[in-house]
Length: 277
Image (cartoon, rainbow, N blue to C red; front, side):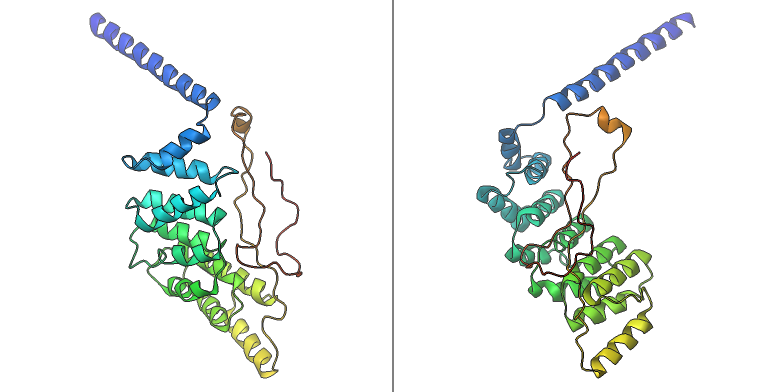
């Protein structure tokens, strides 16, 4: 019995040493971040999808990630890479550095029948909040109407539609207020408010009545539209952020999508957002 206890203790000691060693290695990696050259090489690794995804993600979160040679890689991967995580990462990269033409490229991956990966479709929906092109409106509306699509994706699509002052968009957003997912309802209501300046919340009957009265009065339902700005994720500081001081978090400010000229109308978001941490 004593021999068994000794063996267990020795095994546990070895395990603890291994864990401490692994933790120390993780800390050391934090002090030795991947270089831009390494990230670029990982991004073009045709034999390792995980490396491609990591490389693309690192490039997309760097100040120089919008270089023409990198944009070409993102677009190629969106079109031909078979790994859904690589495609999703490339779509996110185009969302940050692409132009209005890239909206058409991204929108084709929004259709649930054509793209099986929910992660890719979600990345496409969020990317289309940041890339403006009226040609993608039919695809956005098709996704919003799909009752079998995930709620997060439909909610993101409803947000993206807030940049298009079109009657078909208005009607599609009002219809989204009848969805059984509250996130979709709230996103649709916010986009309707951005497009019209009106506040009827999720009351679809009120929206229909207001549109009817406005049209009968021969007025433009989008006359009081606010400036559309894509939403951004704001990282909330945690106590452990002070320990990982080698990480520099980039906090983006909401802004107008690529391809959409800013108007002089007041923004629907606060002007001051801290961009450094």
